[in-house]
Length: 279
Image 1 (cartoon, rainbow, N blue to C red):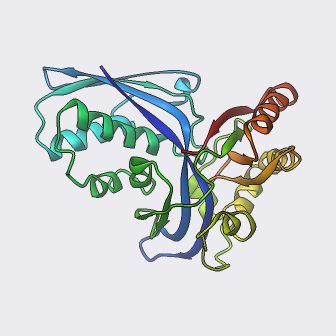
Image 2: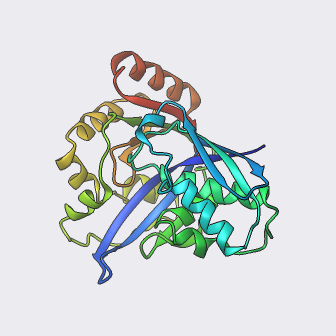
């Protein structure tokens, strides 16, 4: 039995530059990843079949059928490398579904990493083109390190930002799912400029999430979450991640993180929260 963490994905910034002819959007995003997330485990099946069991706090929001991204990742990997083995896969779903923090993409990416090890595949093989077949965010989630993403998010460049790794991180979701397609449809098609993400100051003071406004129009609770986060002691940045509805707070230190997490659990028991750090 082998295990992989499906690290929660954070868009520290997301600039939407244009709608492309293929229906996707041209974006510039700085991806970062929490230390925590869903958990994917697997053991080998000699008969070649694949199975998936899902449990955890958000298991009921997912279907374990053949369209699940974890099983799709397993099938595409098995087919691409002509693997005779199968696998019994177990997903512990700790992260809310359709919430802008990776979700299915992180699970699929973790499955690719996990099954590559389980089935003894060549670690030198470039898996990113295969990951891109599963979704725009899957390549970034496969790497799960701080990355600059362009194109539709699949063109990646490793990015070292001094002071970012280990930064205390609080994730908050009002327990409302949100359609990525609906949020992009609500984007006003205004190009507000390039994302400059060369240092922490750029991210805190100049970067933005262009999907935040259309997401709030669909889910007004996002504004409530951001208002609470912006009032936290020790706050560096409060912003929505991805297409929402999860928002994040970057905080000065672990004391501020623990205090903020305790306050929100007490004052907003209906919200989902996760205290972590950036990888």
